[in-house]
Image (cartoon, rainbow, N blue to C red; front, top):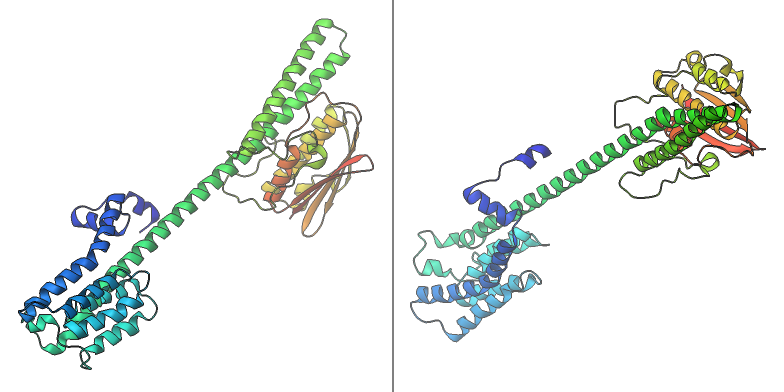
Length: 424
């Protein structure tokens, strides 16, 4: 039976429902009834034993027999904390009074709870009558059992032990089922939470690539128009567009950070002014929970990205395998090609944002087992018109890790360096 079937299974009716309430998940009222029954059982067993012993002997029991019955009843109260006490007292009561009722109760409890050595104790109980250590039970003396006296071990020990074994095994199976259901529920909840987290992460990546970089480019263009135009009205309009772009970019950064934080309410470690040179690297192997492939900037290819950067005034110098279509030359699949495009888009975007007009060096290497690209650009002292922070490097690193690659970045001799390794 699957976990879903167990959850939607209709509740039992009649006696089955009452039994499940007792064994499976008793409510507080049922628990109180069970505790009351456990407290009354020793007293009821003692009263019944005294009455039945008098019925079998056809005379009132003497003081020694009554004292033995009371001792047996008191010992039953210790069956949970000190089971050895009733195990010793029960056969003594049988030997003194001829009543096997306490042995029957102890046999049921031992078979249900199965403490250490319970089989040896039941075996010893079974041999009490054949060895002549105890008399015939009261039921034989009263003539209420139409069976040979040799069946005393069967009636006093074996049958009660079978009843206790069924009860104990049922309780254990119910507990095992509850544990499995609880574990299945926890696993299902963890999978759902993981799927939600990865979907939010995917949305944050796509929003960053499809919205954030385009808004940044729009803002840079608007500021360039405002700086170069001689017309006051055009300058005012361009400045307004740039200001609106800055506000929108801050909102995009906030939404992306909110998606990446999820429901944890924790600050995003990838955001902040130091994200350009000190982004936190993600988990190297995030679980691919969705079938949707990693996408780059709405289908913009390697060459399109370089041409767009050069159109913005950035000079891109290509070296090695980066001179041509490196992904096609290396035979990379669509997913790894998209990672190369996304990383290059982020590298060029950072160069335009933090070092406008600088020369960007793009170097490519193709090895038998991997492809490597290195992007370098000088750092500029000029303040950027775009708001600080963002998640670009973290998003790019996550894309690389999703295909088994690695993205590193550092600053060497005043130049920012982005180093990507992707397996072929």
